[in-house]
Length: 64
Image (cartoon, rainbow, N blue to C red):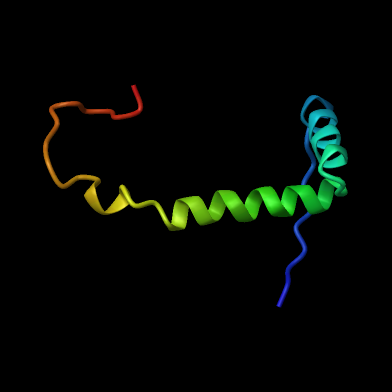
């Protein structure tokens, strides 16, 4: 089953997206789907996730 997702992105994002897609021989839509697929798989398969919060590092915000 597939779903349709419609998004509006600013031109300063679309132009490089279009260029990257063209270099890969894909449409911007195909390239975006591939990119999202890879990104989501990385989040779902993050081997470090099991260790998050398992010990106190003394650092309140790991994103700093």
